[in-house]
Length: 465
Image 1 (cartoon, rainbow, N blue to C red):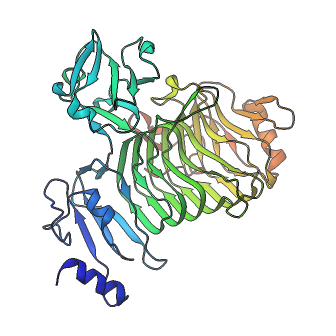
Image 2 (cartoon, helix red, strand yellow; image 1 turned 180 degrees about the vertical axis):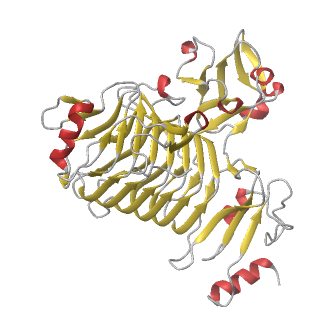
Image 3 (cartoon, rainbow, N blue to C red; image 1 turned 45 degrees about the vertical axis):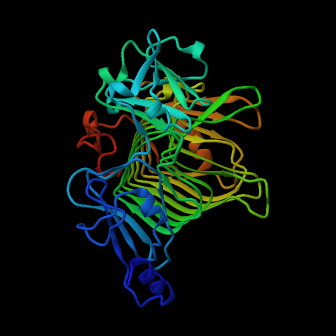
C-alpha cells in the first residue's frame, strides 16, 4: 500500500492510526522518501507544506539545516496539535527565505561603483528586496532607497520591480568583499493564517522581508524556543501622498487571534515590532477579536519597537492580553533605525485603540534603554486602561521615559523618571513599577539575566536565558 492510500485510510478511520513523526533534512533528504525516519527524510518545505498532515503529527527539521522558503503551517485539533520542531545536534534549523548572492559571478557592474544582479540571480527575485545582510550582520546592512538617483552612499540600493533586479552602490563586487550576501525578500518566514492547534518549538527564522511569523485568525497556536533575527524592511504600500511605507514584525497576530502563547523566544534586529497583536476591520459582522494572548519569558533587543498594539474600530474586541516576565532592551538600536522615515524607537508602541478592551496586563517585565522613549500610548482606551504591575523601567541614554499623545488635546505630553510613576498611578491605583538602571550578567554577549546586586534582582523575573 502506498503512502497516500495509507493516509486516506487514516483520515477516514480517525483514531485508528497513531500520529506520525516526519523528518526533514535539506542535505540528505529526498521528497520521494516517506519521511518517517531520520534515515528516510524529506528534503524541502514544499513537501512539508503540501503534506496531508493529521492532528497529532510532528514535523522535525534537522538541526543545522537551512530552508529557503516560507513554512506554511497545518491545523491540528484541540487535543492533538500539529508540532513543528527539530532533531539532532547543532544550531537550530533555519527557515530563511532569502536569496544568497555571495558568489562574484552573481554580480555585474552596471556603472562605475554600481552593481546589479546577474540574470541567474535576478530570475529568482520576484518580490521586493527589503534588506541586504552582509556577513550575517557583522557589517552594516544595505540601505533601501527608492530611485536610482538616490544612490549617494556605499550600501544604498534600489529594487527595480519591473526588472526584478537591484542596483547597489558599492566600491567593489559584493561577492568578492563578503563571504555572505543575503537578499531579504518580501515574504513571511512562517505563515499561520487561519491556523489552529499548532505548535512551533525550536526553529530559527531569519532574513525575512515581511513578518517572521504572520497571519490572521490564529487559534490555539504556540510559538516557543525560537530565534528570530533581521526581520522586515520590505515595501508594504505607497500612500496617496507618494510616501513609501515599509513593514515587518517579528511575531504578528493580525486581526482576530485567540488562545495563543509566545514564550521563551529570542528576537533581535526587527524593522518594526518584535511582538504585536493588532488589527482593523471595516465590517462589524467580522470584527477583529484579540483574546487570550500571552507573551512570556521572551528576550528582545534591537527592535524598533519591542511590543506594539492597536485594535480598531469601536466594534472590535480585545480581552485578556498578558505580557509578563519579558526582557526588552535597546529599542531603536537595530539595523533599520537610521533608514526609517519615522525613527521613533520605543519599547511600547501603543497606538489609538478604539476596541472594547479589558484585561490588558504588563507584569514583571524589564524595559531598558531606547533611542527615543520607553513608552508611547494614545488615549482612547475603553472601558479599561492597561495595567502595569511590578515592571522595571530604565533608560541609559537619560532621555524622556514616557511619551503620550492625547487624542483629546492633540498635544504631546512628556514624562520623565520623576513624573512617570505619578502618571501611571492615575490609571492603576496599585501601580508598583520601578524606575532604575538594571545590571545584566553579560549584556555584551546578550545574557540579559539580572546580575546579583542589580536594582530589581530577586524581584523582577525578566526573561529566562
